[in-house]
Length: 489
Ligand SMILES: Cc1cc2nc3c(=O)[nH]c(=O)nc-3n(C[C@H](O)[C@H](O)[C@H](O)COP(=O)(O)O)c2cc1C
Ligand code: SF4
Image 1: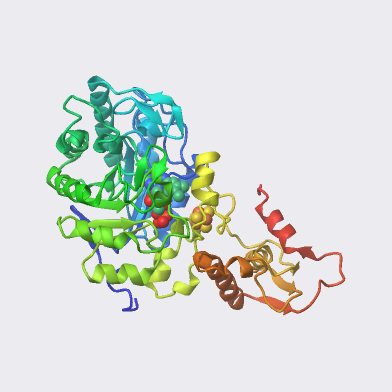
Image 2: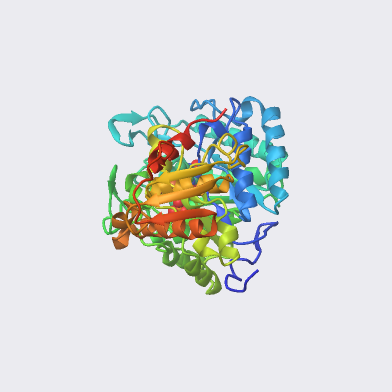
């Protein structure tokens, strides 16, 4: 391995578990097709995670999995059929470990006011539906949820997961609603002081360790600043914060360490301040480092940092300077499963850039319920849409060197066809050229650069400054890419 990213390449200890490098796939709930009726990983889901292990990530988090089918009804809960869950989990973990990767299962304590019909700490306005109210949890219901969580952690261990992640003191989900004073108006032992607001978070780690053993790692996501002005209102500057301040986060981080958590996975924002939670391209890469550093100074457990951590040089430097320990990569790992290997082998120019557009992933997730990607057509369809050699090799003529034509040319060449690409102007890129001109859309320009680097290395004949040939067999770039996306038998 080149020396350039030697800190990113160093192993990291999380509790008793050693991770082979500093690159971590962020927890992301992705395709419904990844989970079967009992919440077990399907073949498609297993393929998705194995592909990221093959791509060099040392640690992989699952997306948040539901634990509760009693207090809040969730369709796919692990306890419905633990035998099924364990069988699929063991296969997943065996295949991931073949690449030297480890996987932690993220367990979702609840979403509270973020979805209609679910329980919250106190009666609260539902996110984006203020005319609706979430009912408050009773003390008995809280205990039921904790019991279910602990049982599921036991199943996770049997399924071969190397640890669990508690979801989450972030994005304003249920535990976060307990932790923030604006959403917790309780007067019992779960409300009031910071320690009371964190009581469930404490019980979860203590009880999981009792059940799974002290050396079974438990991590937690923690938003270091909420950037929230009011319900459903963001404070972009953070000046009118009614959520969590950095000062309070530092106190929380110290408490979490004392409760027994093995690492903190930090980000910022919540659903009310969505701009920070799933940052678009307008947010500067690396903005989390300064926040993470403030917490890192105060605790000795590893600090894993996510959200726009897509510039490897910034991450390498921050680890070298002791400001953080691990890099949590979300959307860029959807866009390019080989992200980690490409950085660690010093081949950054080969990374297919995530546009931070949020269109295929989080927007689609919140509106349609499944995830695809603007730049990675294989996302979520790892089995049905895998790049495979064509049985009959053909000469394919593509007309138009815009993004669709370039993707079609790349795919056809990778599948073994001979490809000629006609572009009537002198430049490939089409609409990517004007779209990538703004500084805040630099990822779009980077995508154009990436296509051109890829096409140079593939057997694609590029004919610039030429109109379409006079043949009925030529297909336009857009037609071909449409045809390629059609489902295959
Ligand atoms: C489709 C999608 C689903 C997500 N689901 C989860 C989840 O289940 N649990 C979680 O902690 N974060 C979830 N996140 C947040 C990501 O882990 C991450 O914090 C966010 O994408 C910002 O990081 P990035 O800039 O590296 O993408 C999700 C994000 C996306 C895009
Ligand atoms: S849809 Fe856009 S933001 Fe989401 S992973 Fe793909 S390129 Fe990135």
